[in-house]
Image (cartoon, rainbow, N blue to C red; front, side, top):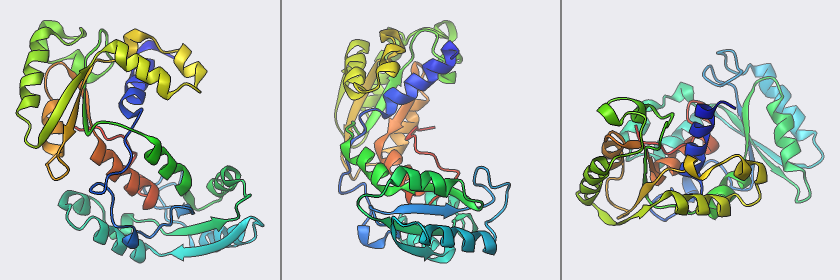
Length: 293
């Protein structure tokens, strides 16, 4: 893999490694979601879904997918969720978030089948087979998604600094003589001053490359190839912010992301929101990253 591409991948892994378990303020009321955490959600095609050739699933494809799911011996229940029902649930869940509501229209919401399986079922196989069916946009195993979220840990906002020869656009231009170089002392000083002015800030800490690499190795201890391919120099220094739950996390995260010397900033609450939009509503244009633009 090319060096710049690998560094981009590592930066993303570091940003998302150890993401935090769910807080009460971050997750929605479970009574209003259309998905059960133990189900496999099979989302049907919409024009924006990858591999759907800019088309909705046809009525025949929908019937064929339903028949296929119901005839699998491991499947114990299949229920259909209409576009209208899913959109209504989405509107209730995100009622206070105008930007999210404005970005999603009823026609963007895929129809879906929610599948329950027996305890001995090969869930990975069922999801893989469902993904291959004509008319399916994506199949998502809710148990996998919720396990990833529940087991992870992270501060509320993470601000990652530039490393030498970083592939991140923010580190390559707009910094004068510091372009392509690690964040300078002057840049760090300005970043710290901005962090200390963030409304709703509880505390913050600095994490150097050595600490980041140690945490990375511990988090991915079972991924030997990934660890062997990653160097200490690939790790960015960072500032980790703890915020009050009721505070505005988005605005300061976006401001910090635009500062010279910052490669990217990550908002945990944004990631949780993106997880729900992608995994629980099947919105194909949303891939969870938590990155602030």
